[in-house]
Length: 359
Ligand code: PLP
Image 1 (cartoon, rainbow, N blue to C red):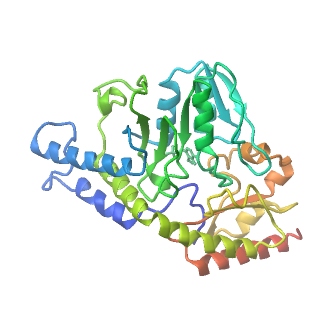
Image 2 (cartoon, rainbow, N blue to C red):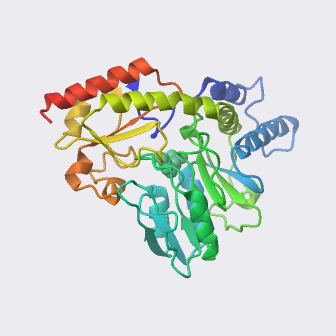
């Protein structure tokens, strides 16, 4: 099996797994203690949580704090619903965790369009009265890198706060500049599933969504998992140390894979892009058939979040693709642990299987 779905989730780094193990130990090692208990094993677990918080914070700007959540989806819900916005502007290519939460918030929702390259214009107009603007750092379907620093400035000029979904960029790119709220997910940066974080700039007020024991400064009640926190922290530390090396690893993979798909059309900008994302289309391609012909390749038809829903990807529609062009698109995602040879073999097999369809 060749895994080429790094936008859906990344493999757990062995360093992250190692950091988790002491907190998954049995009764003799006391690693199971509640990090909110005041006794010694509880304090040891709390210390592991705080170390992890610092490691995650090191990926983020100074002048804010990290609140652990169960996922980036929860972090984005906390950021949006916790602000109780009246008017919110979101890009048309945001993840459902932003778009659906904005709609559910009861706020008036305004959309920021993207062009065919999959980029929001850096000088996009923010309507008067907007109090929250949300634009992601890197799109999960087509990998495009948004001009978030300029958009944060525009949001502030309009009197709004800026929320950045940095799920696909965190640990790969420098932290988004100028944001007031930033959402992250451990499992997209080689950490465990089941934990995310919201970074909150100092002075930004939020109302909690989850009430109870008052953990996470009252913003997110519930007992934290020291194992998940430690895994997230170790993954963040590793990502910070390896950022340049991980970038240097994916660029030649992208160049080679792109060359193997001669005659296919790239979805989204080739330059303003995370190069671990290759989203391509071919007219007339039957993607369901392609995937069933190549069951030992784990790649995606559009976004993993939307696939299976039967709906055409809202991102591919937003960049101007017709329904049939969007349905003839595939996403190949690779990263730190992808080996050039296995990627080359996979791409060659996809190209051959598509050719066998006569497209
Ligand atoms: N935002 C983006 C851009 C994503 O790609 C995803 C996951 O696919 C999410 C948010 C949600 O992250 P999580 O799985 O941690 O809820």
